[in-house]
Length: 185
Image (cartoon, rainbow, N blue to C red):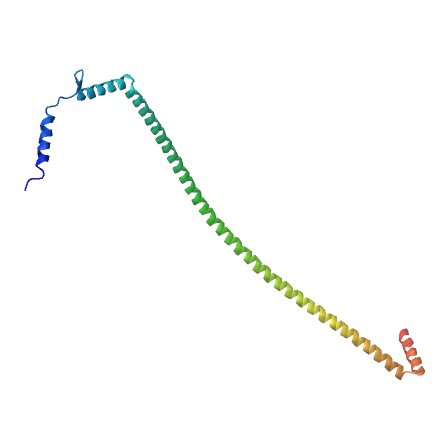
């Protein structure tokens, strides 16, 4: 069997041999690599002539100055934040102390109020007890006075009835004479 790649190998070999035979293109004796080198030299010269490195340096210096300013501002902000944090911590501690003092004072005042209220309640109960006792005593006296008045009235009515029933004109005259005789003595 015949090698199917025989033609290809020959063609490749043929193409490789023909490539060495061609001449490199040039423009007035300047080849492509030389043209590239000249273009690079021209571009570098143009960059230097236009002072691009100085402009890049100035831009970088401005950026560095801006970054330094931002760092300084950040540092001052950090210091300010630390000062504020310390101030708020001190205020928090102060508020905590004040809260504890207020709580203690409120408890003390509440205890005093409870004590005063207890004493006032005891005094009021005692005062009301005395008032009730006085009122009961006054009612007793009034009842006794009323009983005496009622008894006196009943005795007077009984005496009047007895006198009316037992005395007649003779008895009246003897009683009046006796009363008159008692006056002279």
